[in-house]
Length: 326
Image: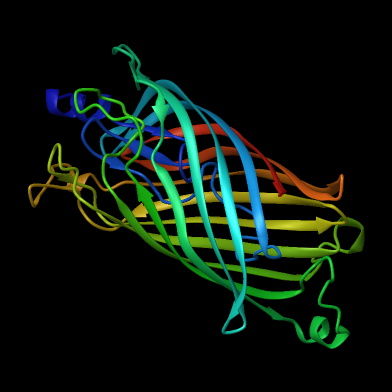
């Protein structure tokens, strides 16, 4: 293996930091947009107006690294913990609701190819993800609309959400370190989400409804001014298919990304086909909603296991999220 290939491998990891899948290099990074731990269920639905907060912890292990030349044994870990804040405005625009959110996290990561030195981040703040503004509208099914029950527990029909996400380079960064919490550049990420609830496809015993949900971002990265490296444009998606049963929601979720433009340095594409990366990971998700002390709560636990990757490491991990309204 060439020295250049060694450097590329050693300077690349994948960590469950922002949208559950991020590949960071010494001077450049692929950082799919999204809140810490990613999105999963009810992605296009907004709660009633008010202020909401969530605590999230996301530990992950890394067990392999893939390139066009093959896969290489590796080991590593990443632990991120943070909070998400959501404000749903008390106004309606074109029949839909408006909201803004921000996700703040602290993390630490290490990565090692077998037989090579281990590299670790300094530890500290991650980059900040914010939904600057999202608009969500619910289109009820004909049956749901005819019932006249606007406060039904399950919103049968289609919800659509359009938003603008931004990743701000607020995290810990050292240009001399192979591994960093921050990518050291901005990411402008317009996005759209769809959530569709219909009567249970698995029968009444296994659910009151079946929910299909997804959210797609288009990531547009600025240049890292320290290295003049610019990551290529990238799509990432979080998706789920779940059953809703009383206060429970359970099923499968996943996350994927695909880079559609070459990485460049000072305007010139980097070797190895522009270092384009892609990956897919899936896992179970279970969520429970309840009311305690006149306050709504939600607890969500999900797993993640990579099933495909290129120019990226293979992660496996869990995400725990606890949310409430203030």
